[in-house]
Length: 251
Image 1 (cartoon, rainbow, N blue to C red):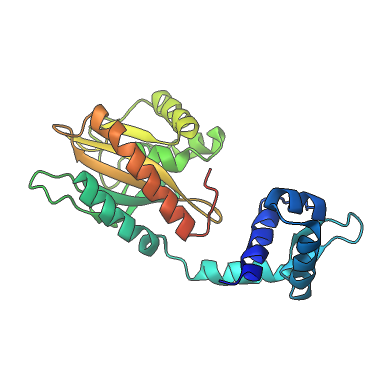
Image 2 (image 1 turned 90 degrees about the vertical axis):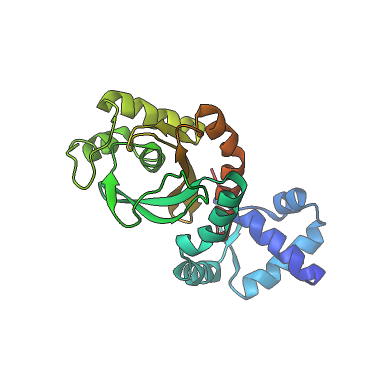
């Protein structure tokens, strides 16, 4: 990569994180380049609509072509395709089943999983909806919503495709959802399925929360200590998937 291109990307990255616009002085200070260099780079970026200058404030922002390029890139994205290699690596490291879940209105949907190689393993049926009011992945997927919206979604706690083994009371579950929003992970043991424990973390996409990444195992060997130990590699994997989806600074 040429040095000029590398510097231009640095300028675009700096503009990306400042929605209110940036001055040449601010950009130069953040990037660590001379103001004259930043000014030349901005002139080139403005010429091809990758940046634009507000005539009133004289501040620079991302240009309209970045939206067109970003939209075209997002159309090619598939969270399952982005996640799969990291799910395989996570399964190989932890030797437990790794799953990927999304919210389908008021239900939870497992869209992919990589099963543990152990003869004693925990798995879900991919594509079969599960209650959104039970389990660690549900808490992750609900943690970004307003509490009033969560209450509306959980107002109907009838079992449709699967009756959770030991569902939490509604208020306790809501407390767990709030805790998940604060900590960035959720754990559940024998809640949706008997003898099964799950820990989940979020995957972020350009439009917000994209999916929940989970590791699931039999409670006989996957207890709180093992779930806690799994969080570091899980978060690393989730960050890598988020980055592949175009989110460079995951919440």
